[in-house]
Amino acid sequence: MAIIRTTQTGIGMTSQRTRDRMLSRLREQGIKDEVVLSAINNTPRHIFVDEALSIRAYEDVSLPIGFGQTISQPYIVARMSELLRNGKPLEKVLEIGTGCGYQTAVLSKLATEVYSVERIRPLVMKARGHLRELKCINVKLAHADGNIGLAELAPFDGIMVTAAASHIPQELLNQLAIHGRLIIPVGTDEQILYLVERKSATDYRHTKLEPVKFVPLLGGTS
Ligand code: SAH
Picture: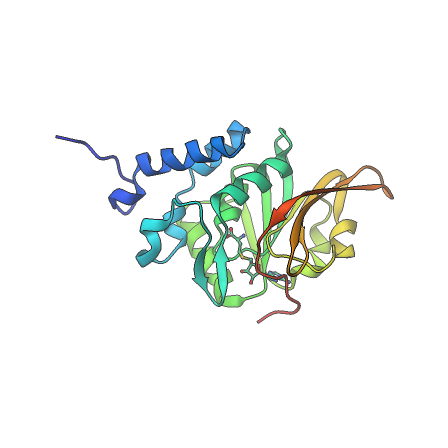
């Protein structure tokens, strides 16, 4: 008799084998940081999506989470996490665009403290529930406009923006620690992922990475 190892819901499609396939795909796509791969392996993605979509939770696609928003594709979560970590443990991280909290949960395994900001209140509540279920105790969520960051908690050694900005918000640059890294998609129709490294109080190095597709970074809260 075949023994199917399952996780949480007991649905076959969310089994360890399905997750193993996702991990091999991420390796094939060039993700090398074992700490990131392990964090993804230990974060059940199916709990972040509606039950009807849970059979697709380990496909490499973004999926709807309501309010016109999406859960990021596993590849981009892995890629941005790898860039932020740069092979080293992170102390204090800020995420802009919590959504359902999937990337936040992955970050909680890579950093000592994680702060995440979301502008849509019902998504903050949803994410809070998911992160509680997964016992991500080093995470704090805020319902606010992420364009202005979280000045009272700055500096951050990593800032990750998971919605596409028309330009890089100055406040986020100000809140980056020296030697810190900011990962942000920039653009409207065509979006490019940027890495910004703060070299000193006044010196920031910008690196253009690859084309990406994110929902837009909007202003204000709702
Ligand atoms: N990190 C998420 C991605 C969510 S999609 C994941 O792991 O799947 C991007 C999110 O950014 C949306 O929920 C959207 O509401 C939010 N967002 C857009 N503009 C924002 C802003 N100015 N401040 C905070 N959140 C914002």
